[in-house]
Image (cartoon, rainbow, N blue to C red):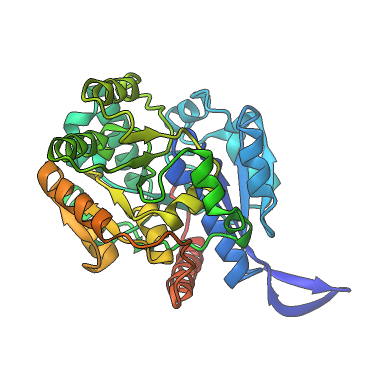
Length: 401
């Protein structure tokens, strides 16, 4: 497509209009932050090449939608077609197309559709990218009910069978794809995301945030949602070991407590905290504003991510951007993502985690807010370039019929 000026053709292509669907921060903070960051850096580094068009349901969080709509270059449309009632998926499966959603895509002149935990049908008349963040259900099947396992597995299989171009976030995920779905003939791209928060999220005084939550000057930060695979239990076990050693360490945890697969997980976790008398050591701050997240990350003694499974960790990427020390579970993607520049522990080794926590706190210096590291923009530029290249390749592929 070409942009005309007073009837004349000029060699300036129209931006690719890519349809995204809203991801609730409460349901999946990593997914929400991924899209927010992607929209920001597309505009910052390659304005006018890709136009994110966000489709949201009528009941989606107004504040979340407004925050995304403020990003330059982003268009937002709300429609009942994107309410998560299950009707659209039923049409996609039974008829081969989510008709109401497809109609909205047509009306907004979409060029390509980005599917994240959504499927709009094998007969969708648009090229589509299917993002597979990770293969958690295959790697940790014990954490899924039979229904949840097959819901996710069949979703992946249907997207593969429908000829979607598959986007992965790491080489580790690519190896998992090859192992679990051998012979996949779809186009596959690895796009490692990198983060660069807008300056507006870095203006809050970190010392004020520390004071607001009653935290000590030196603390470790664990900004993971309370899902079982995020492995909070191991951190609590490590804190118990440290308490018995007479070592005082505070872990500040933030993130959503909502997990539809295991609604009681957060309460069970906090009961374990209370049973061990760790209320002053493990402090859950709730679902806090993003500027507070960055303030705590930048002043923490270290980031902890004990997760048993990641596709490409948003929190690790953010810690890298600010040069925050990291204490990470020893899974392949963490090694890939940090290039060995972190402390690692086995996902079931509370003793090793406790040792790392103690050592980091002993080495903690004076409190100061870290700034973005020199050269971080190179990773961000590479991410943006790779995503645009993927969008161009996928846009020129023919939709499956």
